[in-house]
Length: 266
Image 1 (cartoon, rainbow, N blue to C red):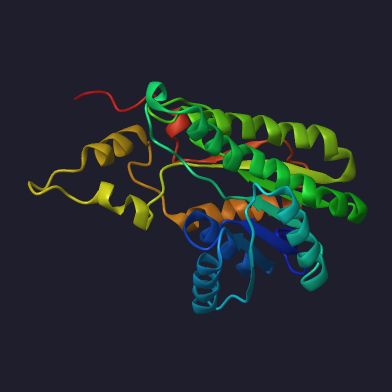
Image 2: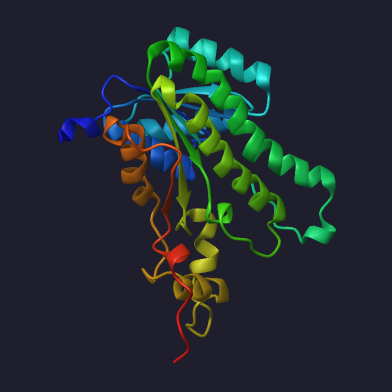
């Protein structure tokens, strides 16, 4: 084994929706491994905030405005990236949304919106970069899946359907393009401590945990929420030549939740 196989020097990595949060953490990890970072977001304001965040982190990133559900827009963005930065070697399909609505109260339009962004988006992005990867003879696609790729939970029917579909899209890209030395794998985050989840982790007035915080800690063998940068190492592995024999796999970075039935009552 050569430890240089984990390096990403000379590689162009495109991470969708990576202005902040999990996408930003993954892109930052890829940058530390030597990759040139490209990201997109839905509007210029988000892109500008992302560029400022990367600059503050000492990372020179390239930002583009693009909606991942707009096939023509995605194709135009990929052509522009290839012209201005280079062929995309690594695609991380991170952009996504979730709607927490009981299924019997959810409209078909709301369901379709989640499917469109969380499943159609990765399909559109992947098909846009695959031709150049085929021509180059190598490529990496990492789909950000979820524990909802395996489990159901109240109020997230559309998200679970999309992420379950993304798991199978991952396996099918592996099946269809493995012969071109393209590896497609998924990364399934557990519950991550982000600013968005901070209110759920604050202690109550009486000093007790928030009910959802207690639920997550009890369901996680690690006994804690995970940090965003804990996704970086697994992402670097899946983006690097060290994982060339790994294809069609979903790597769950969840602190052990999927392996655990839960803490027994004392």
